[in-house]
Length: 101
Length: 204
Image (cartoon, rainbow over all chains, first blue to last red; front, side, top):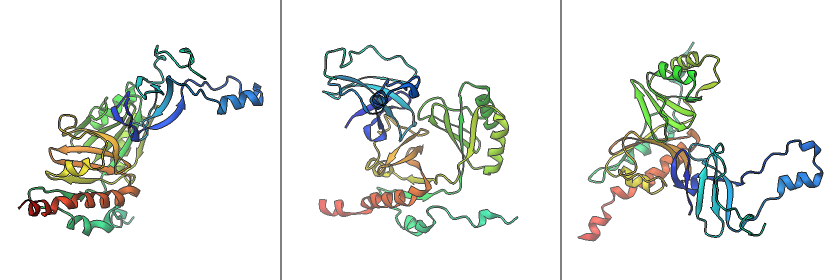
């Protein structure tokens, strides 16, 4: 089981959290201007990174806040935990490290 | 108007007899009791704002600023639920406290809601209380990590609840009312082994 450290509550078991998928997927500036293909890309397409991956988690059984985690998908090692207002930490991401997208 | 409080039933009223009978005596004592109908007010406000200061003034207690902290003044306890969310548990009448806090925040961007019926309060006490909880709670309850006067939102037996330690061997559990019967039955089952003399018998 993963143990994640909530920025507000400290280390807790994975069972207290809810997974929210890839982080840093911005909502399109003008959704109505997108083609169907671009909209589908925004809605359904996500990276499938092998290596460090930024993802969203919610501490749903605790403080109920969303935050971001950088987790290595090969080893499950948690490399960074940061709030939504913190800048994205400087860890090597899968795409930049040459991993498959 | 009739006093409606005379007609109210606690979420565990149907289990009252089983809860009484489930108390374990002896060296490994543990006992469950329900403390129903406490006043609970949910407060959401930016902790740095004047409205937060007004709430603190009305309560006479600070809004705790970090996870696990509980502050108290007279009949009120303030439990940390999130960085901008607190639960006030009190023995005063809900309408009085709700009115006082609503007046305190005024038109500010804040929410004060009477949630007294949302949860009920179970008290588990006795030297075996921690062992009982450890069967189904992911939080480390050992005294090196958790102590008297701390309260956290966590899970017990897979359901979310507020766990609040109020004495060396006393824990208060605040599950949602709809989960209360499940939690009470789970606890009664978990307590049962501490009343058994099976281990002593096997040893002799």
